[in-house]
Image (cartoon, rainbow, N blue to C red; front, top):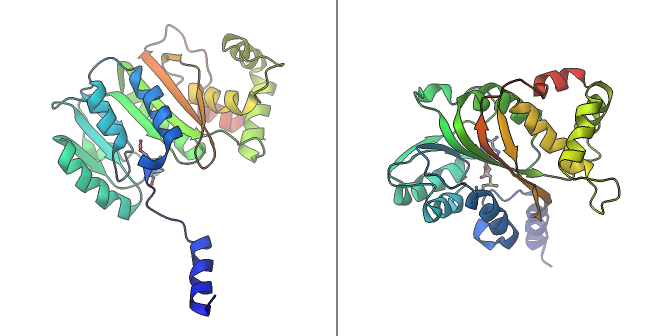
Length: 257
Ligand SMILES: C[S@@+](CC[C@H](N)C(=O)[O-])C[C@H]1O[C@@H](n2cnc3c(N)ncnc32)[C@H](O)[C@@H]1O
């Protein structure tokens, strides 16, 4: 191989491709279908992370979640993808607002002066649902959800060796032991199951905590493999609770040693 080709080959290994072809991902297509097909009502205002191709938004139009009158808020942190997303959305959506700063920095939704809440949100992450995202959900997304809203989340599932995962599991076991066990039983995870259940329970339980101001139905997570093992989680029919059962995520975070 010539020196230039060798150099290019090396660069290809270290360079992170910004543009992913989401059409070429059959497992992702199944997860998208799983997450979106269970929402039956048309949305008035929804939040998306549709990337350049906006395939989830296309599917939502096909399924009737989005109509001509729906307002779409689309978020993208990567500047190149953002430009492509802008172009795609121009062709497929009429009422839209695009946001460039990443989720989790601060309340980037504040500038939109929302006078009505979201009735649907798809938080489609490429990586873990980390502390900053969970705090953002707790502080900024959860309070802006309408009654009966649905929320879909995807995140990586194999976090068993991460400090955060271990810390959260220990915090649950130390301080919310009974709640943790009840959660396992109520969601039919059992000790003998083939699937390692804790990497599913810890992130889903953390999501429950981030949305602790609401009652909601948590559907059985859909597990799929993209670049990493992933969880697709659907939280449905968000309502005002009669009493709060789960601790806030920030409380769990404070209990991590
Ligand atoms: C999994 S992809 C979206 C795929 C798309 N929803 C679909 O169904 O094909 C996630 C997109 O969100 C962007 N993203 C990831 N984390 C973000 C964050 N914290 N804030 C804003 N955008 C983010 C990524 O750059 C990526 O383009």
